[in-house]
Length: 172
Image 1 (tube, rainbow, N blue to C red):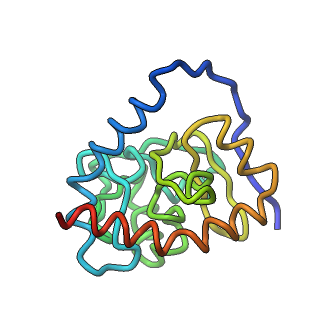
Image 2 (cartoon, helix red, strand yellow):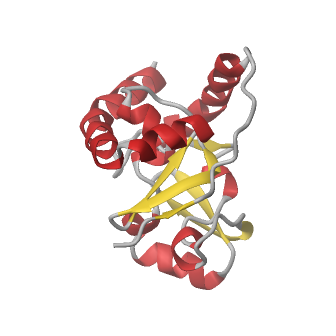
């Protein structure tokens, strides 16, 4: 199977990176609390209730690139609102959301491989084995791709406990 990735562009990282990650996670917590009530993934990374920063998850597969969706073409799934570029994409997603939704609840794949949780940049993506993986920044994307199979295996192993920790934190 062919792997699709976004070209990595280096970005300077300042000392405030940890603060930004923490702030982004705090903005995702209220919406994730609503998603924690026993659904498939249980905790979807959202901003103002919208998954993957409003990007269309189907577009990665059909258009081969990240594309911002529209609230005009939205659907609810797993406690989050998902935006799409067209009614056709919305219907494809509704027919098989697990196929199109990013792994690990839309949180960073490399962070999950390291047994952590981080927000994502929807422009940093990979499709492997028919699944969408998103990453936080170019450095995490490079690490994730450097040993893709091992990182996916580690993230798959870590995700159930990470999801449980998120649920516990949100229920307090």
